Amino acid sequence: MSHTKKIRGYRGTPEQLARNIGNTRYDTTLRFDEARAREYHRQALQDRAAGHPRLATLLAQYANLLEQARDEMRKIWDLCKNKPGMQD
Image (cartoon, rainbow, N blue to C red; front, top):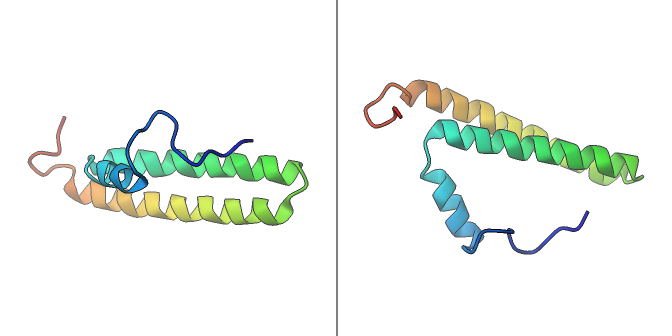
């Protein structure tokens, strides 16, 4: 796998991306965290199969932290989803 320095298809900075994601509804943010967790779990499996157990372990731990962040964001969404401005 080739890791790029820039985000393909995105012209802004990482800080702008973080701000843009932070300005989405909380349910969108938790889906983003979930997708990132799945991606890093996928990479962990690939690295374990490629004989890189230490990297695989660290990637899996990071993915687990993203899942914890997703769970916390779900609590935030559950608290806020019925507030004005949060409906579709």
